[in-house]
Length: 108
Image (cartoon, rainbow, N blue to C red; front, top):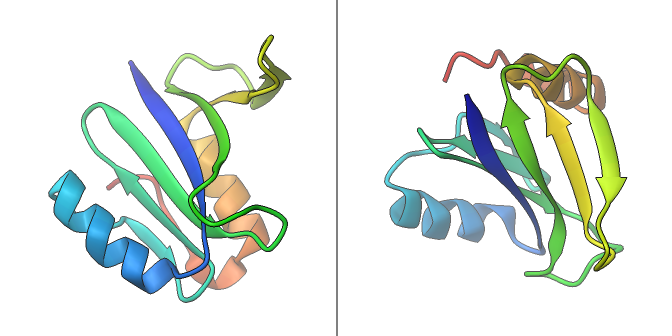
């Protein structure tokens, strides 16, 4: 199964969580205060991250959460947009590597 992944930069994670939780109809399944939040719905995988190198509201990258992905991969399309392909476990491993206190498991 594939879910579209959208990664967006924010300068206020907490306000973004309130807004996107209302829009998506679910709370984030992973949250690092002031840094990061992840929502996984039936069809979408959406993350927001405080990234001082990106303007708030800008697209960080797109991709696919794909249960058949053999490994994490990344490439750039003809428009310069980075696309990733990964499993839910690959994403959990990355979250836990960056923020060990998250102890995130992809069951949400």
